[in-house]
Length: 109
Image (tube, rainbow, N blue to C red; front, side, top):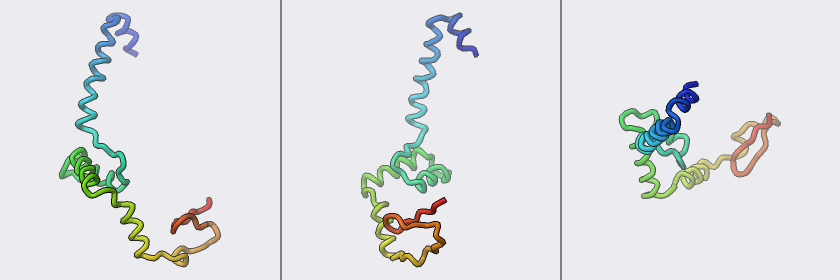
């Protein structure tokens, strides 16, 4: 509850303190926070669990690979499912599941 006291004593100069701290966060976020947009959960897990490189470095490498090779993870997942040839008998039917699009099953709770 120091903000009202600072504003009362410093008046308009108190806002310079807030402005300075906000500007200090800009380079911190830009250089120290990894970009996680358009990454799978496995890739995000890889970012934060491998200590040999910083998360920012790994994130930049992953995004460069995406630009170079394209987004192949959806095609790979589709090809893998086609190769595995998942059939309906592989999932037990207990009456609480229903077939959705593709080979996904939804469990009713």
